[in-house]
Length: 248
Ligand SMILES: Cc1cc2nc3c(=O)[nH]c(=O)nc-3n(C[C@H](O)[C@H](O)[C@H](O)COP(=O)(O)O)c2cc1C
Image 1 (cartoon, protein in one colour):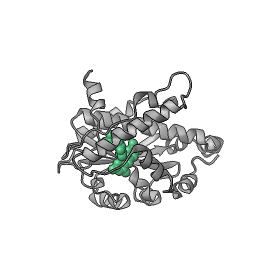
Image 2 (cartoon, protein in one colour):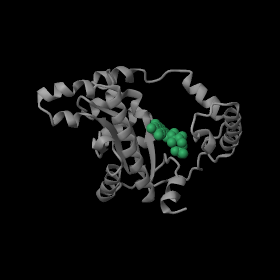
Image 3 (spheres, helix red, strand yellow):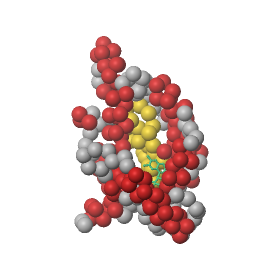
Image 4 (cartoon, rainbow, N blue to C red):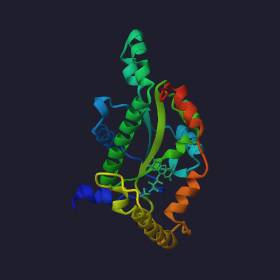
């Protein structure tokens, strides 16, 4: 192990932060680390919006329904951004690029780029002794977040990231067995896989039963099937198309 691996392997989401703001220097270090992530064709198809206005934080917290969206050391909103390259072109060239910018392929490029930058930010923050929590909950009302942040065409808010000094020490959450997520050469869709996931379900049941807070009786399989048996945030599909992304 080394320090980088220690940081990565010690990850757990933090949802309770001390009342201490990050300094501008800390914020800039984290953003610079995000920027150093690999990026498809050098496009850097993301914008990170840092929220320093308490009123905006409050509004975003209302969208998410989660108190740690406002009670933290800093809040980022990670946006997939194909607006920037459009801005650089004349209207004639914009027309030429339209089909490409609106394609599913470029939508994938932008969302992957954004996620890579975000995870670099997470590792940087955790290496600095900070805790983080990703916030997909901002998509509970994606149009509202879009309006609050005044995002232009071709830019969508993907998720938030709350950061700060941890005021809780949750246990590490178990992960699926390595050979369930790592297959060699071809996809291993066999009975063995299912039995390994069944074993993991039993391990997770013990974890949920024995952890310090929020104990419950649950398994990974039951949790996933329960979640995916109902649709949520179906407005996101139309929202993305209205922002002129993932249209063709
Ligand atoms: C893109 C993304 C969105 C997430 N959204 C939320 C969220 O809205 N609220 C929350 O409490 N946790 C959120 N999480 C955190 C996950 O629940 C958490 O990473 C997962 O349960 C594993 O737990 P761990 O991070 O403590 O290991 C999100 C994680 C990711 C990657």
